Every structure is written in structure tokens, then in C-alpha cells.
Length: 241
Image 1 (cartoon, helix red, strand yellow):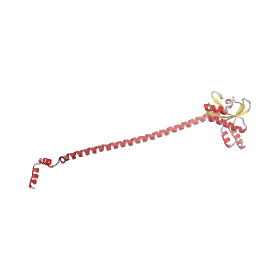
Image 2: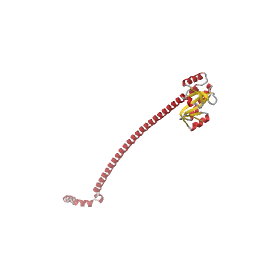
Image 3: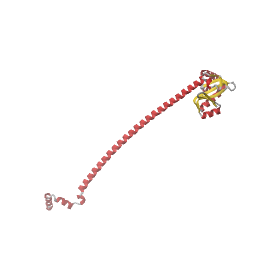
Image 4: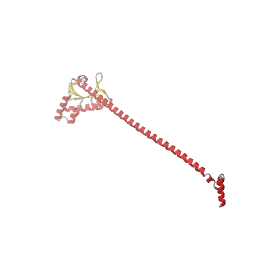
């Protein structure tokens, strides 16, 4: 016990002996433990810094993704708004086109009715265009007498132009049942043919006619098959056979 106390006293007097004593008493692992701990602490600090940097990078990336998502969303809204505007414009143009087409047809109907003697002179003479009000009264009488059904009367009253005259080929009285269209299609030919047949219930001799600006190839073929006369209004009325 005395030697131990003497050793302690000697170490207190000679501090430089402590390192040598530690080297003798401790293993290499224990001797290097402080340095190892220091290295671990530094490594942990570096790891913490890297984690902090990664966290910041992730935060920035998330923010960029959010900004990009908002931009995409706003772009989508703008595209949708633009699409709505384009659709609205297309509908407006379509309506304008439809209105112009109707005006053209109204104009043509008026021309063929008011100048029937000129347009239909190759088919008939002593031409007389039937006034629409007079036609309606005549059709009402035919329905009242049971000659026409209500559906037939509603169909015939929509006929564009009805013209009475003497057929040039034989002088017989005939009624031209005329469907007017700026561009004559198959449906115009079919309406003229159907209405001309129905008008015969009134005891009339009828001739189905289509008149307008131009005639499609299909309509020309249908007219030939249905026996419908086509008249085109160019520099002068041209009879299409």
C-alpha cells in the first residue's frame, strides 16, 4: 500500500510519466480510443451536415415540383380557356355561315317566285307563281275535305315555290313543285319528288323541280332517277337534263 502511495506521489511530481504508465497499463485499442471517438464525432458531424444539405436539397426540389405543378395547372387552365374561346368562335362562325346560307336561300326563293316567268320559261308558258297564303288556304281546304292528312299538309306547306303554267311540250296545265337551295343535294331532289307526288292528290299534274346555284354529282344522278328537273341560276337559267 505504501509503494502504491509512493507511486502516486511520484506521478504527481512527474506528470510526464503518466503517458508512459498509460502505455504500459492500457491496450492499444484503449490508448487510441480518444482519437477514435474524436474521429467518430467528426464523422457524425459530417454526416449531420450531409443530411442537412440533403434535407435542404429535398425541400428545394419539393418547392420546385410544387411551382412546376402550379405552372402546369395554370397552363392547363389557360389551354382550357383558349379551347373554350376557340369553340365559341367556331360556333359563332358556324352560326354566321348557317345564317348566310339561309339568307341566300331566302333570296333565291324570292327570285324564283317573283321572276318565275323568266326562270321557268323553258318548261312552261303563261306562268303564274302561287302566293304562299293562297297555297296555305288551298291546302287547308284539302285537309278539311279529307284529301290530305295533317302530316301531308304540313309537308306541302313548306314547299319553296309553286308555279302554275302551260307545259310547252303539249300545252297541258301543270304545276311546278320547286325546291330551292344554293347548293342542291340529294335531299332536295327527294323532297321535290315526294311533294310533287303528294300534290297530285289535289288533281294536279305536277312536275318536280330543283333550282339553285349548283348541283352535286349525286344530286344530278338522283334527279335523273327520280325524273326531277334541275335549273341552275348562272348568267341565265340553265336547264340541266
